[in-house]
Length: 207
Image 1 (cartoon, one colour):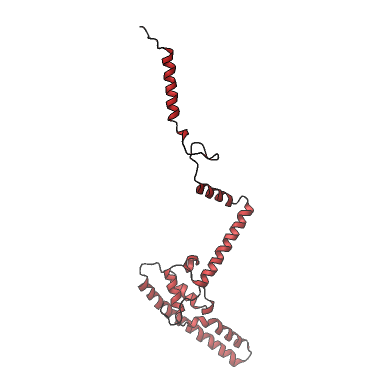
Image 2 (spheres, one colour):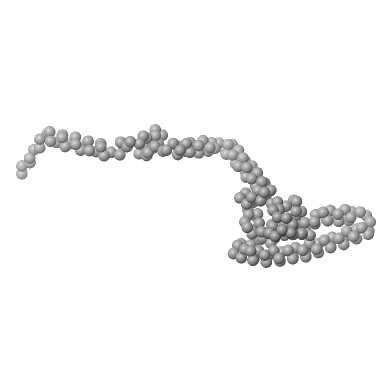
């Protein structure tokens, strides 16, 4: 069987055309300039992206000492925000135990009424002083005052807890109310000016 021979010029001309077509269709001739630090085959990142990347790299602590220092600063900042939130009632930075509408309502409920338990500490100091005086009559009075104060606080706390539980059920029927009554009763044991978060309602004001 005879094979036809092709001219040499035809062969070289075909190869030259194929190489030229491959060069034109190559994706490496993109008009977008490539960043020298960017990986090959990827476009140059935008200036804003590059700056943000550099800032993130620069802000990353390089040593354990720097990391510990940054953690202390972040902790100090968080505590300062929390302290300000406890004074102003800002919900964003309050501790977890004080957050939420249920806890806020419980606080306002206690702060809006008169509570016998909030005077427990001043009365306890007076009773303690009377009990230290070596006079039989004064010591008997101190003992009687102890009993009266404890009974009043228990009764007042029971009534407050019952009424608050009912109010919470009416106001927040679908919310998690677990621990809200105990949280409010513990707050009632503190003097009004020493409570944290600070009271946001006046006495007699409706919560």
